[in-house]
Image (cartoon, rainbow, N blue to C red):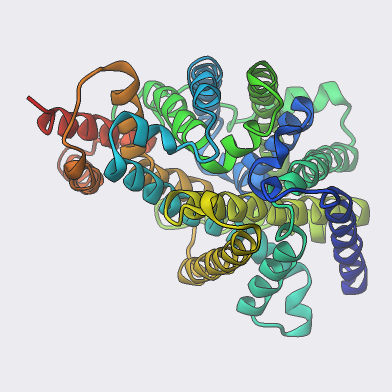
Length: 483
């Protein structure tokens, strides 16, 4: 694509974000950054959360991963739907009952201060890595589409994106993001639909023909019953439930938006509608992946394969075809989608990280308005630096990013999941001061146990490492229970 056109698209998109920021920051209170004044329309939150959950990872990585993993990811999506039911009818009523700003306040009520700080710290680590890896993928595409033409180094590209995000979020935070995420979700879904239309038009297929092509393709395999495989149905389905509960229900980033709704019922409607839209959209991206490979096959586009027969650099498939083969309209829609992904993946994450750290570790609620603003701005800049460092550490990583994100999440969110499940479904009291030790030992033990089983018996936990991690955390909590 023409670099001038790319630059124009970026400028116009950012101007829209700044316009939204200007209007949403009017008449804001000190709490607007953290709670959105609890006045957000539930349907707006539901639609906007789809974009934050999808990010550049789903937009680019899910279509590409079909080449190595078929449709097996849909087993995970089915588990997601069940996980959202737990969030809707168990977690949301709990959060509204306690009137929480930071959801980790529950751990303080249930166990004590050490557990509270530990839970919040695990979220900070999890969200920092998750946000950085999501932004990494989007930044690589923008580097390829625009910044490389001007010989701008990759680290400068990342700094520019983080700076732009800071400009439109620093004042009203979550109040602005509820609206910007809605726009970004629209462009994400539009990018997928336009690309599908461009492919089926190029291949002279009707809508019915394209559906049949996808269904009859060798990659259209949904269920895997091999017990040793990481893609086994039961592993994927259960992992889908647990990772959804952990990465959405126990994640300040996602729940902070839900808690901006006017009341509990609105928040529950938001959760149910959001989960339905998300499942449909993810299935759409899987179907898009098959169409991308069909297009590559019929146009003799060379794909690189590794020694194990796996396709290399699957994350490059969608950007390459959209920007170089499918025409200008598809290229622009893809570019808008990936820009939306890059901003939506990091803006809400930075706001959530700032909220969690300022409330859970700095007790900002007792500060004056001026002090609150100064502290909030410093923390926001601090986490921007943390995300930048993580991106640069993983900048040379290969393979699909989405698998890497869920593997890391299994280790970082596992202790959180164990703490919440143990707290909600038992009345056992524990020695609060020992909780940090348990929460550190559990993921370490999970890692070594998983490595041993894979190397010795070729048994792969896959995404189920979160279940093992949470179980070990619960066992540890039983060990340190009070007599």
